[in-house]
Length: 237
Image 1 (tube, one colour):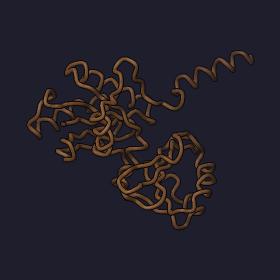
Image 2: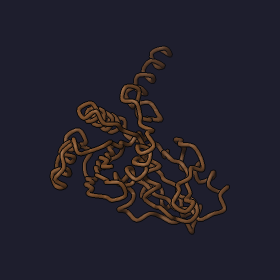
Image 3: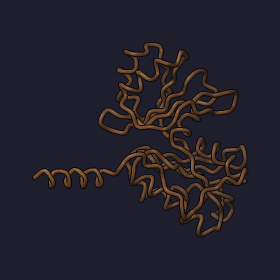
Image 4: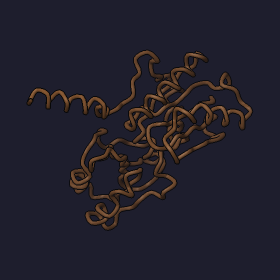
């Protein structure tokens, strides 16, 4: 089974093609957030390098978030368009789960942290049981301070991974001097990790519905928040 996997949930844009357990190719651009401009070009380039066309693909995997509102919408629209054009299935996978999968076989707790602004992170907790990735909690937006308090309950080594590490590393080390940190090249969602999880869902026929699927935004957009603030201020006046 050949699967095309894409992620546009964060600053990076990434695309990979997996053939069963073999990674055929992967492109990741982590420079400027221009996903609407470059995503289809990345897909076209990767398929061209691999001498494949879109009809050679048996299914698609896309990140369902959390992450950037605009990025998630671009990813969802791209995959829905490809599914419509090829009549092939797709599945969605959590960005946090894909991040955790970058650290496969790590001992202890894997704690992905994605920047959610204003001192908050998107997070979830995972551990590996041999090659099986287990969720230990639920996805949430939480302040970094509250997350560190929560992690005190786990008497195991903790490995942090994600784009919020640079922002919070010093604070983490004050609380957990022995904390581990993923190397910088793994702190972005990898389409190959997304695909490793998603291909098993496709093989089990657990595909998403193209008409009902919506990304997991986890919070309201900036425009919605600004509108609600304006309405509250108008009522006060």
